[in-house]
Image (spheres, rainbow, N blue to C red):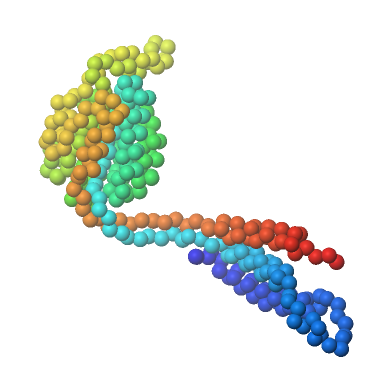
Length: 328
């Protein structure tokens, strides 16, 4: 236990005069009279209540002691520690173009992809994971980290409209490569989720795929969308969003070529449950030993001492007015 103000522990010296006062008070508490002999009552047993009265004083000292420790502010201190874990480097590249709002998934493609991705991250203990989002441009949302809670929380907080609308698959893949290329793990993989075809950006998808191949990075591509038509969001003449059934168009050829070029695999997700297949595939990736540094923040830890003080004080009140009640 670490204390923010250990000087308050000097208050425990107050116990010395308190104990001396208690002993003096016990000796002068009762009236006395002189008798010729105490032999007739010398062997009479003492009542257990007599011993229990001393316990009340000990508990009072316990309450004071708990308060002193609370004043000293017990804490868990910030610290770094290095550990070696088995893991792999992974970047999740998520398409956030407005077409991801199509409602052929429940509640829509965007929320379904976020939900499955967050659950996947939560189960990847020891992996070094980053997040890239892309639409008409790409953006590194979370750099490579082993903090799964930070990643999962951010994925859940991603909002539509954070980037200009469009689908720049090549830029999203290039940004993901730039994030993962310096990772220490032998196995490096990018999971790219999109529901369309490349229609903007500065980097061609296959150019980015060739770069990933040269760096030994596998790309797992997921085309999200049912076969046939799906209700897509469109803005009407009054500026309101309405859903219109339109054909589902996914550039499967490009997504498949990206995966095959890099040694990954292409998946077509036509429903919420199908996305789990790629995560089962990622679980089979080769892992490697990695050194990770974990940070622990400072937190006050006075609550147990406060509860102990309150419990002791309550017990003192109960005993004093029940089995140890005295009549003046």
